[in-house]
Image (cartoon, rainbow, N blue to C red; front, side, top):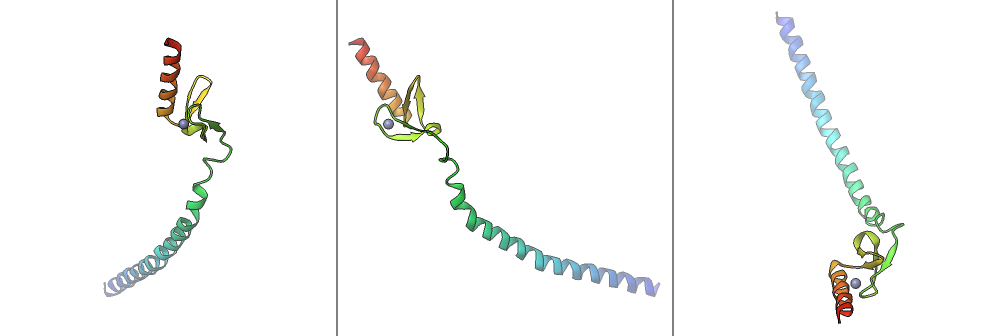
Length: 97
Ligand SMILES: [Zn+2]
């Protein structure tokens, strides 16, 4: 019975030791990896949206905006919803007067 308790103590001691070693070494490594990734990724993530995206000229103010960020009405393109409604209200006035 004495040996069994001794063996159990050794096993528990070994498990605790291994856990300590793992908890000390692993989190630090993952922290470093996360930090280096965080430092590297931001500049790369800002560009992909604008690449290969057609730039269209706003019918109202003439500013070029990415197609996905603007608003289109028929064959006309607008940089903002405001300019779209402005242009539409202007054309409506011209048509009625
Ligand atoms: Zn505009």
